[in-house]
Image (cartoon, rainbow, N blue to C red; front, side, top):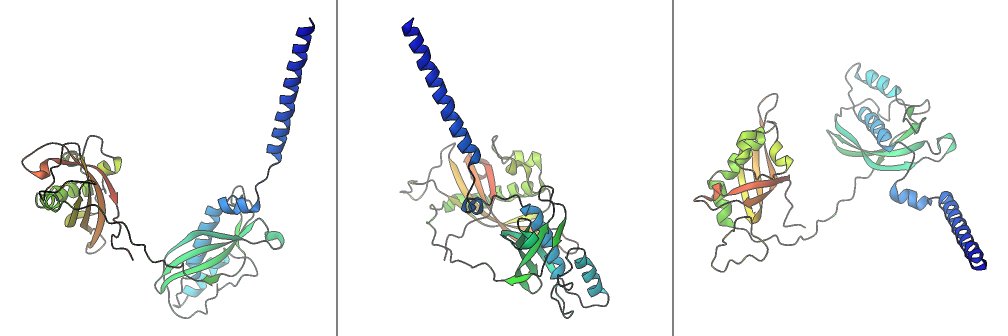
Length: 315
């Protein structure tokens, strides 16, 4: 009986200790607060940054649009008046002379809290990049938000400031890419494998694409451009050998199932309101050796396609 009683007391003590420990742990967890440095580092805030960034960009687009033709300046001021507080410059700094058109304005992701008076916690300087006919401009736009949860009640609460452009860096020297299988690249160009694939891909021609894709091809390979770009012309093609490939006899014997990366430069015609525009775009293709055939263009298939090709020269 004594042994049982002692065991119960011990168990009760353990449970009590665990409950106390958990209670202390819970209390500590509930009272923990992120430091200002953590908030800044992880960009944690109740402020609706995306909405305020779009609002600032809309204002900057109107602000940096200059049209001195009769009536245009008055219309611009009327548009600006819908955004600004009473003490903000109603002309947004323009003296009414000259012409400037804005093609794009977007928030850069950078912002700075405005911590004065009633603005504290509800206003930020939003950095906006604006592309104009005279070049690229960077401006800071002060935005106030009345309701932080819904993002309602926004207002421009001050004058914009011109800021320096982002600092450009020298590109580092990249690692050398793998060796090129020039023979295979030429064969796939001359056999019109790349030409026919991009023609089908540009038109999003599903039945035609099936002839050039692997069964496990990615969705971007099977979807295509939907006819937004047409009449592809292959400007250059580089097919890279596998790492450590043996070319002792000057050629490489590709085996069924092996994967090759190809870089392709394609000129497209982009239909427009008037004459079509010719633009060259670069792609990275993942090719799979599917079978042995009499022609290289019949024994390869595309598993994936990605846009963009890196600069292998650097600097």
